[in-house]
Image (tube, rainbow, N blue to C red; front, top):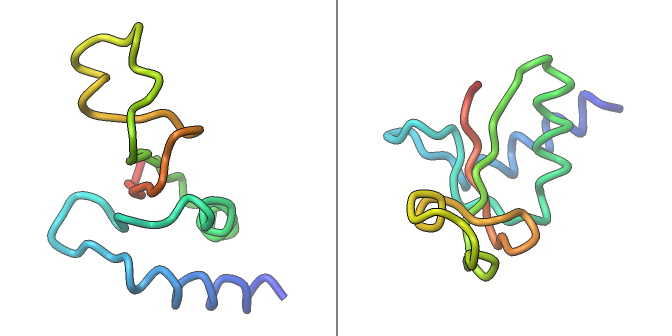
Length: 83
């Protein structure tokens, strides 16, 4: 069963691949977060997720973190990087 889930996730992620960037995938909708993490966990690969979207909760954050990231609760998409 997990084999078919991995195949389906990989097929789904093909549309979000970013071959010329340092990220593996970018612009992946947040709704697919759990599927992506389970796919990489099944393979034993550690990945890092960077969330993208509006930065609503930036009131007390430093200028560096304000512009380069957003919180998971505000995210619309995310990017996947190798650890």
